[in-house]
Amino acid sequence: MPGTGGRRAGWWVVGAVALAAAAAAYDPDGVRKFARLRVEVRRMEAENARLATENGALAREAKALRGDPAALERAAREELRFVRPGERVYWLGGDGGAP
Image (cartoon, rainbow, N blue to C red; front, side):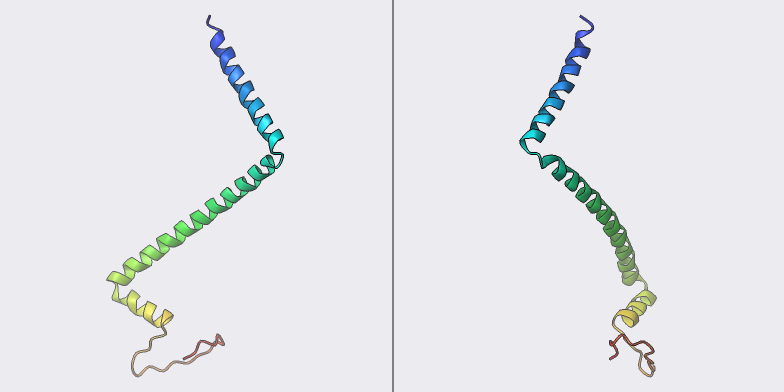
């Protein structure tokens, strides 16, 4: 019976659709919940990609700070506001973070 395999597969599809319809009838909010969760998954995937990019940039910066004295000095000056002895600093911005 060469044609029975195709019919059997068709019944599996019908059964799966019937099962999905029964589940939707049992929990009417299930479809809406599924749609909300799918949107949330997409949002989280986008956030994950953004964080992976940021993580890569931070890894490159950490590598530079370990091996490049100029990068270390730049970071100390920018982030910690370090000044060499004898230098004068003029604050032109109003960020309120002046020492």
